[in-house]
Length: 230
Image (cartoon, rainbow, N blue to C red; front, side):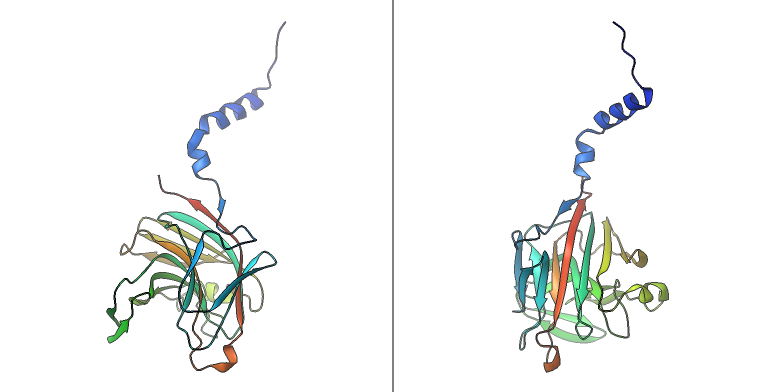
């Protein structure tokens, strides 16, 4: 008995078999299961985080510093994608390669010295900025050096953010390269080697004396990661 094989099918089969475990390592994995906060822990302030309708919802509360919902696991080189929606009066961000100060620290931002207490989150932040400045997708160094890559010279990215709508981030970390996209528009492109790995976190910014911001919310959904570490 003779068997005939379609050459295209055979080639595809050999390609899949030959991919092996490397291909599996590059698959997307969810960071949020849509139902619980398993795998996350809160650091910094006391803003509230709950799961509602498949989203993580952060709510601003008074008299507390910046709050962060952090992954329990650190990540180095990766591609991160997520969607977010933020109230126009709030400020937020997504921390990457971040850490927590174990002791009080004195840092200098724009020539001014500031004290950061133990327990303060620090590290790269991909900004969520619904204000007129429109720096969403820029990179800020939270509680450390300040702005590293604002979007003042990227008008296309500043126009890409959609007010009162779901927006999409793509964040790529490869070695000393950090790149961001907002709604598929290239935003920040940073070269910086200060921190090579750390947790990912979702920020609810402190509201200070702005009583009108208390109770306002920022939400995240469809959070997934592709780990590039080999």
